[in-house]
Amino acid sequence: MSARVLIVDDLFPNIKLLETKLTVEYFDVVSAMNGPDALAVCEKGLCDIVLLDVMMPGMDGFEVCRRIKSTPTTAHLPVVMVTALDQPSDRLRGLDAGADDFLTKPIDDTALMARVRSLVRLKAVTDELRSRAMASRVGDPLAAATAETGHNANVLIVEDRRSSAERLAAALGQYHCVETVASPQEALDRVKAGDYDVVLVSLDLQDHDGLRLCSQLRSLDRTRTVPVVMLADPHDRARIMRGLDLGVHDYLVRPIDRNELVARVRTQVKRKRFSHSLRESVQASMDLAVTDGLTGLHNRRYLDSYLAGLFSEPSLRDRPVALLILDIDRFKTINDRFGHDAGDEVLKEFSARIRAQTRGIDVVARFGGEEIVVVVPDNGLDAARQVAERIRERIEAAAFQVQRGTCAIDVTVSIGVAIRQPGDDDPAQMLKRADLALYQAKQAGRNRVVAAAA
Image (cartoon, helix red, strand yellow):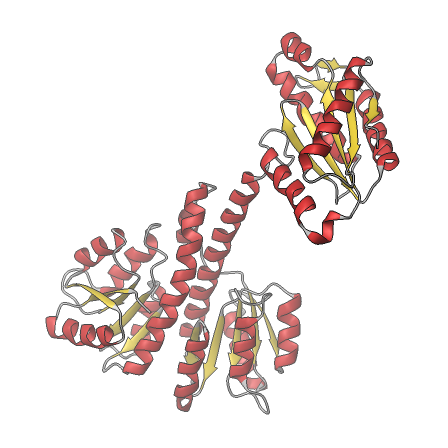
């Protein structure tokens, strides 16, 4: 796994020691000997993970970590504090500053490499989402990440020792909504049905393999993005390393410090919500790419792709499908008389009335200008004509209110209808017949439905 590791330490021998270990494991290494230089490397995007010493002159590691995690452009960087400090209060200070982990010197090489690989793997996923979200320019997920508190989460604890489960729930219950279960199967059922932000799993479940449950949670589609935290005993070192290799997000070793528990869960909640906001941004950009901005209908790009699928997918080629082309009568007159803003209002209401008369499986798309196309799957010509007539009546039935209700405009629509015929090789032939039928409706006096001959 190739990744760029930033080592921050004011002692050169310490840097060289870590650099040698990481290089053997095929990591690229950059270094800094003070806080300002480390922040500069991070801000330039020159690293994927930071191994940060605490005891440095000037700006100490806690402050460096705090600044990394409070800056939108660097908040996503994993930070592992590597220090000789070994008191629970020191570890808590690091976690409160936003560190993803806190390793005490002398460093266990296996534990270090497992942690680095795990965090780099998680960052790679986040980076992909970040690049897509930033390209979409939908919202500002990076700013939202730095404002996230990590509180009010839904937490599931999988622990069959009642006293331990109660202590964990009491500690986390001050900040989160906590549920506890005793069996892996019940945990899977809960997580599949619910919406949890973090799952804590005891590795010492009686008659069950807690690590297997962790693996299942990481592999199932419904639970893959839910952070998993292992609860382990000191002798479980090998299983902890195995869990990190499987993609488990974090772990706590018993006896569990209450404050560390709260801090680590908070970190996982913040990371999960950040990833979720990135996914929402990406989805929003995808929706925008296939949606007409004015009417909220599908756009021409989506329509072309959908119709192409109807004619190329073997399972869809032989299914009946009908197509309607709708055009507002004398729309140019509406724009000329009432203005383009009023014309836009008419288009929005026109689209809303069409959607109200169609099914969920029907595709309604803006074809261009004031033309709307409705694709009606699994229907023949008679049924499609009935749909078109229903829409025509609904458009004519009530005047369109525009300019904040101060003006009412009578609107009618002409509609051409066509169905797929056995000799059609592509959508263009069906569209052409529907367009010709629309032209005939206009020529015959408008405000009518004309169906193309089968």
